Length: 511
Image (cartoon, rainbow, N blue to C red; front, side, top):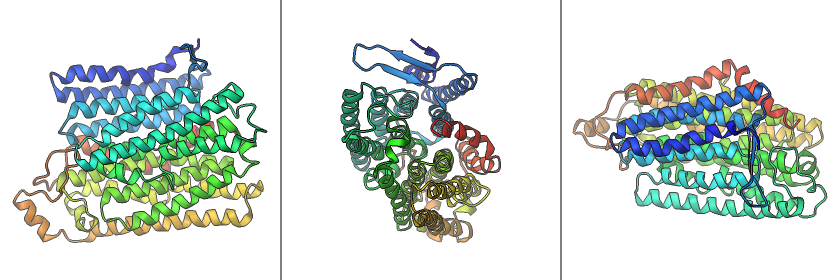
């Protein structure tokens, strides 16, 4: 039967939804506080599982539910790594939301916990069948968060995200059913399912699975939902969508490449190399699109597309150093992008400003917020000693290692290194003007005039209360999570050995 303790982190947010609904009937503020406590408790439960895992405890569970495929759970190094990152960011975002979200608080809190339930279910399951169940819960909960504002734009973005996500799920279901029929297994935790090595249908199964998980990750050309959903969602939800939720797709890609098919299979076909080319293109495409944006959160959304390209690059290099860089970037990007979206949310919440051209001199009004934004942006660019530098460094080393193993040619390896450098320079192009204008520009007189009369500058409220005169920083409820995440990008860069030890445990699973 296995160890039921593996279900604890999954059940806490699920049961917590019911508790939040009950408590919120008497006090919405208390319901919000309970949401934060539950997210923190879930982080504690995941940390405990990680401790047990390191002690050699068997953390697998298989439940017979009357179907040919069992409902299976398993906590390994990769799943626990994603679970720790997810619950950490969820806890900070839920704290931030206590002040930020002022409308439909109970609805937001419930689906915040329900999306966490789905995310943990995804990373702590042991086969494709079980993963898909949680992916559907995750997709619906995420769509509700995107739709929170209730405007026609929000509804359209949410339904587009949900429709495309369903298409991705269908492709995964088709491939999973065919693989189970052929091999009798849909296991995710091994190093390749026996029976797929010599099948003529293996490339078809691979691309069906990768198409499904690429949709959920936001890889080009199936990225179209991401720049629509992330900007329209409330900023706390945007921080989760971009910082953590798209990593569920990257997690699925790792499991497919290394767990379902195995290195020996994908290394002998054109499959992984085609995925490698898509990853490099996604890196550059996302950065180029970010440059031409005029709205802050939309720029950050396209930046996320570029950054998920880094992760997919590391996955598809099929080298130890490449996978190290990809998994480390999952960790770093969760911190960086969550901090950036939370900082953007403070700017919108306090000033109503969304357009990049209106952010001139914003650091004079919100110095702490812009300090956090600057630190996270430096990490995104890849300036040492920020965490973003080290993940990109390992990706470059991974490309050179792939050359040494003859997986790719010498010129392809150099081309990938060049693409990494180019992408970093493009990051400077779109983050640089925001930092320079925000730090050294003058606050527009018309903005002062509008604020003096209590008018909102923004046309949308981003899930928070209508914007009035707010020239100062928000309370610590919003500042603490933002600053914590921003300084973590520097702290975990200086002490990169802390996440590196966890990443190495993941890499050892496959190499």
